[in-house]
Image 1 (cartoon, rainbow, N blue to C red):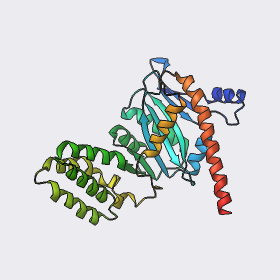
Image 2: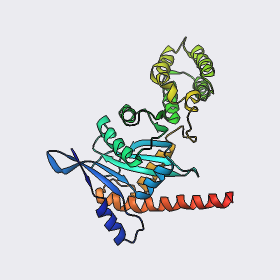
Image 3: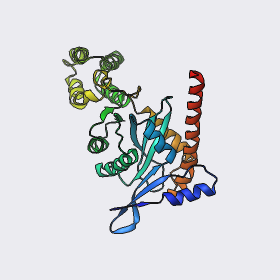
Image 4: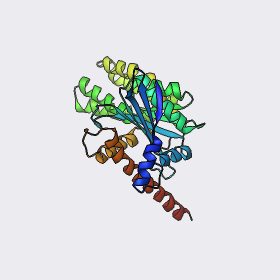
Amino acid sequence: RSDTNISQENADNSEENGENSKGIATNLEEIGKNPEEIAELFWAHPGSVDLCKCFPKVFIMDATYKTNKYRWPFLQIVGVTSTYKTFTACQVLMCSEKQADYTWALKRFQLLLGNLTPSVIVTDRDYALMNATQVVFPNADKHLCRFHIATNVLRKGMDLLPTDKDIENLKLFWNCAVKSPTPEIFDKRFSRIEKMFRKEYYGLVCYLRNTWLIHKEMFVAAWTNRHLHFGCTTTNRVEGAHFQLKKDLGHTCQHDLLGMWSLIHPATNIQLREIRSSFERSLVHTA
């Protein structure tokens, strides 16, 4: 496979349209047998690259769908500024969601960061993405989305528990356990859940242990709070980016590559202007 850089063409188009930025730096990965068939496409706005290098500590990653006529997954990586604004670090069209696709995308993201390494990476429990983050960023602390975990736990409880009171107790005690400030307190709180359900609903306890407790260091506060994560305990920021992306695309999945770029580029410029404004307001408030 080979990479092709087409950022200069995009830069020229931006200048013609009166944009101040240099456009979107883009890498294409081609399939060896047919050099005209694109396998992956990586977008990174120069302004976003600058933000990545200013705020490289925490990144949230997730793929979404129904954004293009090829029916390809669309990976978005977002970060957090000092004013707690979400910025789009990069966006990647991938032909599939295999580990190799994610690894390719993250290696391009690594090149974008240069010698910087994220401190925390937040994802949902997508093993292909999780494995790729471990390959490319082995020293980053990996966190899982608490919201998705809580949703899955609640759904399992609704399948197995007979009463609304039981389901509410599971929700309450699980959320309490996840927010435990120390490993000892977590063990104590989870033991309470076990005692409550293991006699009649042992399958639920097995589910919690075998599905989620094996990853407890990735979502329980006792472990995640050892690392600076700016309150990013869920993938909500990147889910919000998905929503905004689809809004920018007109809630249609009929765009080709150039059609997507023509809508994503101005939307990214608007996002960057809003972030610069937040910096200016912050300076005024601290002056």
